[in-house]
Image (cartoon, rainbow, N blue to C red; front, side, top):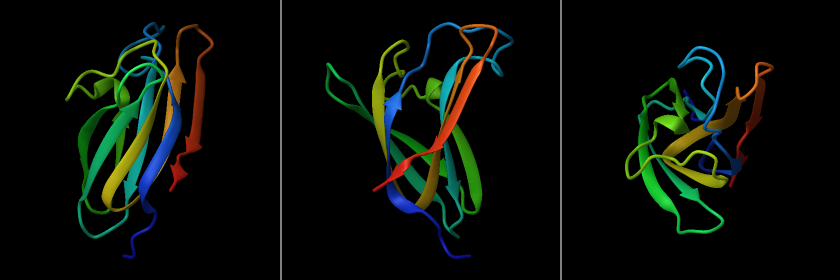
Length: 123
């Protein structure tokens, strides 16, 4: 199959609320990078986070197997350090093979949940 996507993506807006309602882990407030790898080889992905008031953190490393998708919750990224809650950030996602990245957020701080999803910016 022919690879689709590109090797660098940017998500200029990120925020993980510390609170939430409903059962966990399904309804835990979270940010997710949905990464599609339609190539015939594994994608080795690096995520770097950028903040308004401190130096970037990363890379966080994720492997997306060939012809698969991974929905990587930023909440679950811990190495080199956990992604902070209640803190605005942006992210740059780089891959060694072309991938497609979609950004999704679930904000469950109130019973009327809010879900947003949009394609990340390809660069």
